[in-house]
Image (cartoon, rainbow, N blue to C red; front, side):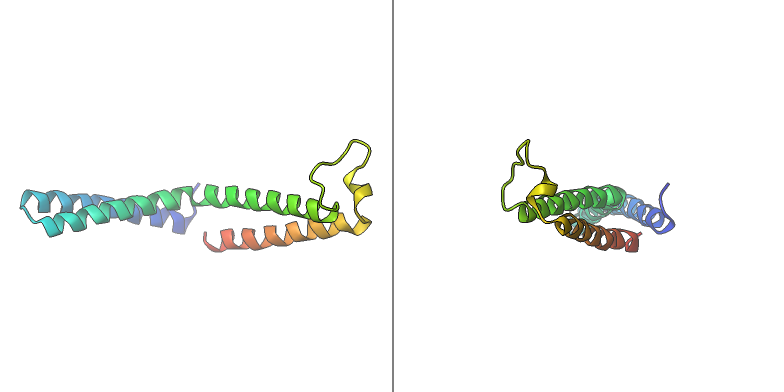
Length: 123
């Protein structure tokens, strides 16, 4: 399910949590407060890294959907003369020039391509 690099990242983060916890425990037992603080920081940083790696694809997909929806709404508002509500007798096709929908779709496609490219580049 996970890509190779993503899987390796999760394993490294889990190893960081385990090693950080061991340093934290041993340093606290030896009354080494600086070592305990560094171990605690390693546990927190590795845990956050594991969460970001695990939730990264879902987060990118959610932000992609949000951006696409925002672009569609913006293009509708721009090309429909600024009215946010469309009346029952006036469809968006009649409110805007015929090429407006194509331009709005093109903007959405361009944003989708850019965001999708970023998502695939990080995998």
